[in-house]
Each structure stands twice: as structure tokens, then as C-alpha cells.
Length: 281
Image (cartoon, rainbow, N blue to C red; front, side, top):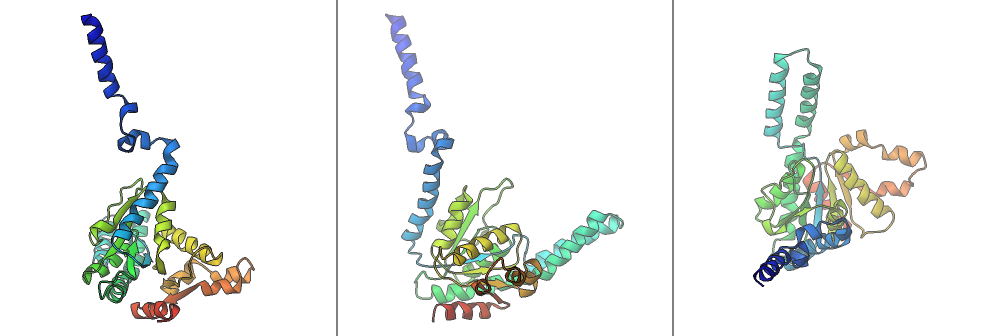
């Protein structure tokens, strides 16, 4: 009899510690199963959506751009460091390349201040009377994203950060409104939240990630699969070197009308006026 009671007690202990006995929504191992991918994607759709509703976020302005374009003082420090390393080994081709790249980042670093100033303008106008319009949304990381969140922070306005889990850890910048900072696993859900409430997309010089986000938006606009928004690209000189849109039209692979899907701007004020004119304000 005693042995039977011990066996029952042991079995009950195993039951209580069995993964199957965990409440499903608290079972991280279960939620991580490949078969639960649709549920995880739904959660990534709903979590930010519910938070935006609670915070009465009515419309947004999306700012894209490179993580590597830092503020001018930081860019200059990086260049000085690269030059100092090259001075130790003047014939090192890799270090010469590092200096050349650092010089190009210094040349683009004023865009950090432009992004910050633009976000200040948009945030002041959109949240002037506590009305959460034109709320700045970025990918939540460093560089141009940090600059845009910082511009909103400068004027005590809300801003959104949509971080993404990457192989190399990406931490959120310190200027995002805490209750509006999210971490995503799925790029698709993150992109959806970038565009759902967007009234404008503002794109600064960037690399593969920025190009991906830009072309995603251009494709959706071209095919009429999203709301009409202005797509404004800062730095005509940069973009025309990187992408020859006119050549695409000349080759017949896009229509001439597709060239009207975007505009170039050089100053924060110019971009803001474009947005206001687009929306008839």
C-alpha cells in the first residue's frame, strides 16, 4: 500500500511538471513551436495595434534611413580613429578603405541633424494640442532612426520605435516613448505596422534595409495596395547615384507615371511643405 501511494505521489509530481500541464498562453516552449507560427504572427499584429489604440495614435510619419549615419561629432571621431589606425600601418589596404568609408559617412552626417529637425517640425504640428497626429515612427535603432525619435523627444512629443530581433543584437535608442517601443521577430508584421497609419514616408540615405523598406512602399503604392501617401527621399545627389529610376522608365520596366510616386527634398521645411500640400493643408 505504501509503495502504491509513493508511486501515485511521484506520478502526480510528474503530471504537475509536465509541459502538457502548463497553461497554453504561459507555455513559451509551446508558443515557440513551428506549428504556432500563425499565432505568433497574430500576436505581433495585435500587441502594437492595441497599444496604438490605447495611446490614441491616429496617424504617423515613417522615417527610414541608415543606422550608420550618426551625428556629425560622432562621425568625425570615427574618422579620426580610422586615420590614426592607418597612420600605424600606412600601406594597409583595409585601413585605407576604412578611412575612405568614414569620410563618406562624415559627408552624410548632416542628414542626422536634418532628420532630427524634420521630426521636431512634424511632432510640434501633429501633437500641438495633445492630438496624436503625424507621430514619428522609426525602426527604433541608431543613426537616422535615433535622430528622428530624438527630434520628437526634443519637443516632448510621442514617437514610436519598431525594433527587430537580429543576429547581431539591436538595442532601441533612448529617445522612443517607452510604451510605444516594440520588439518584432517577423519583418512582415513590422512592415505592416510601419504603413498601417502612415500619412507620409520620409527616406534618408541608407543601405540594404532602407532600400528594402523603400521598395516595399513603392511597390504597394504602384499597385494601389496601400493608402495614398507622399514618399519623400532626402538627398537627391545620393539617391540618383544609387538608383537610376529614370533609366528604369527609359528601359520600359516601369511607367513614366511611376516616377511621380516619390519626390526629393533637401531641407526639413521643404519636406514638411510637401506633406502638407499632398494632404491639402
